[in-house]
Length: 487
Image (cartoon, rainbow, N blue to C red; front, side, top):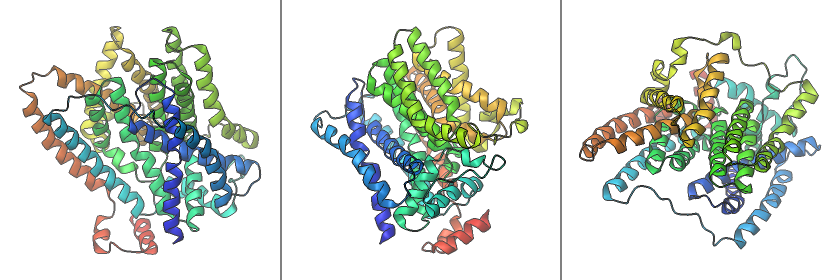
């Protein structure tokens, strides 16, 4: 019963973020879909919950279920009251493709693929316990230690404190899952991070739709879903895709701030980047790209200094305390855990999107060609603001990856959703340029390829398939034996 209670409580915790999300989005004149409201609710709920846990620990309050849960709902209560008073302001309906039968079929077809892939990934997360190296050695380990000790993991000394300096939003989410379950419930913990990872798909859709249009949004989300690296890492409990989700949300609100300068989008652009840095310290690099975009907006007289200050101030309020604590206790901001001497500065890594088909498949070719097309537009001074946003938030990040950590393609996940938006926009332009009489034939051919791709992604999304078929109702001990022996 306690385990069932934990799953229900976690769902309520996430749902409690919805009123704040809906109210904040109602303060902007920019279009706000139901998808964006729900995505923001997920980010705000887990973000506020884990920040509350962090601050309680700093104040010497032991981490226990009700000492966290009651103050959390107290924080959510004003959002509920504000939203209830203004509840007649509902999200604006999505616009985009005309609702012809062909377009309805295309939306249902694409949506069905995304739902099937998401379901497979979520099942894998909720069915198997942790077994990847970094989750066992860092994220799950520290989440379990904080569950057992009721406080933050202390620094053990300058020589072995590197991993303790990693941001702890995800480990604290694991801690809360264990507290709510009253046991080390790795399945609920993995499900929470899988939600963050899967949220990259609708976030990619929302950004693509905002920048280019509805078709681009669908294509962007499908490109991400068809990247094998996404399916392989989304259910592992790693923090790369959760950070990518928050980084993409920050880009969404940074664009909304460009379109309609207002305090709500400024606050959310900064808060989402702060939460990204609260998830993985690589997001500190992303803050520089956010500043670059804000500076460009100021030069174009779209974003004033007042709102730039609000964005960066909120970002600092969210993320800086963690890094200040690390500096005071261990003189660490970015722990030296990136093996920069192993970075491979070669043409193979520079063109990894096509040289590593096992990670990127056809998505990689689309991304590379769209990058080339966008750079050509930029050099010819024909790049529109949406293209510049995507270039600013991705190409410098890719450069940092190539120079410092190109030994591991997993880190490309941090900005892969935005690269997929670039690719989706490029494909949408090509589609619109095609003669209309060719489109039905091309769509059928693409649909066949998409179905084949979906089957492959579904296959790699679920691990240890023979063991599941042999004993689908196996217990926790049997599952741990299988995943640990499989590694």
